[in-house]
Each structure stands twice: as structure tokens, then as C-alpha cells.
Amino acid sequence: MTRFVLTRLARQDLEEIWDYLAAENRQAAERVFKGIEAAIRKLAKTPTLGHLREDLADRRNRFFLVYSYLIVYRSGTKPLEIIRILHASRDVRDLLGLDADES
Image 1 (cartoon, rainbow, N blue to C red):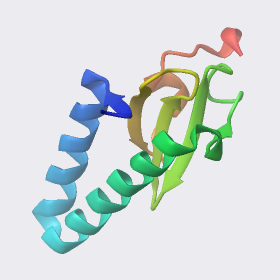
Image 2: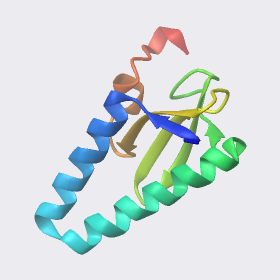
Image 3: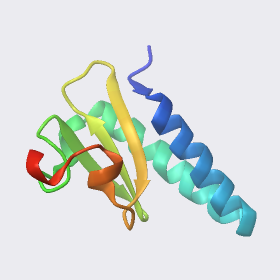
């Protein structure tokens, strides 16, 4: 049984991360990809591991950092729903669609 699902955007994020890293260093891409995959499996078993970040999103979403990437997920869903996987330097609020007035 699958313990997690990736949204279309999360799958797209993973593809973009892979393409970006592999263009420069395939081993680094594999290391990051495996780290993200292991973290997602860990979160599926223990969804409370991540942190709430009300400065970035509402309380439905949690965040877990792997290397420089934030795994954004909904801990209350079964299976665990992975919303996005974003580089921490990006405008996460904007990418998640949270306006300044919504926090």
C-alpha cells in the first residue's frame, strides 16, 4: 500500500530538481533525489516530524528540509500528500499561493 502521493506539481518539482542538478553533477542529483525519497518515506511513517511554518503557509501544511529543499506536505491526509518540493531559496509563499494578507 502506498503511504504517500505526490501532487502533479511535486512530481514536476522533482523532475526539475533532477534535471538542474544532473546537468552539472549526476552523482549529486542521485544523492539529493535519494535523500528526498528517504525523507518522504520517513514522513509517511511519522507525519509529525515536519514543522509548521505559518509564515509560509497555513496550518494544514508542514515542512521538512532535506539538503536545501523543502518538502511541503499535508500531515492530516491518508495517504500523506506531498504538495511541493522546493528549493528553500525560492519564494515559497508565492509558489504556494499564499498572499501577504492571508497569513
